[in-house]
Length: 213
Image (spheres, rainbow, N blue to C red):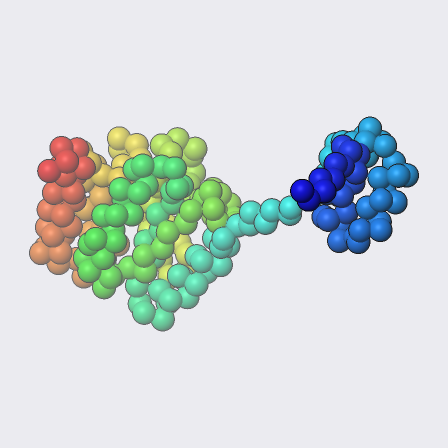
């Protein structure tokens, strides 16, 4: 019969600790002899309960994406060189009508490209966006989207503030009519076909926006 060796609890515990620490067999007996099981367990619990180091993560600071004054200055400079006016529309990311107007203008860019430098000013995301808006908007009523058409020198020619208030994103027949008149009064050569094209495109867009078809 082979001899059977019995180890006490303290020896087994110390042995396992030493294995994890990479110690040899001599250190097992030294550790087991010098410390009781209760002492070892107490030290292990104390280490486990020690507070973890606090790691502080620096999140990037949100910055304004663009300077509205620079965007407008560049648009005016382009308008001078190309002999056009500047069509400026103001809005914010959370404004549903602003997104609708932007979608209409982007989808029908050829109708405006010959006469205007199309410029968007986001008053929420652009630095100085509100300053540029307040420079041209004489009252605080009507909200956004809001439109101003400027000469290459920066002179306001017409705004979206009509007889019934800010037409914003034109949806109603009277709003569409006013918008078309804005274009008619600021085009160098407003052809009837172009004005009809803008009117029809707006009417179809309004219908689709309202009915979804």
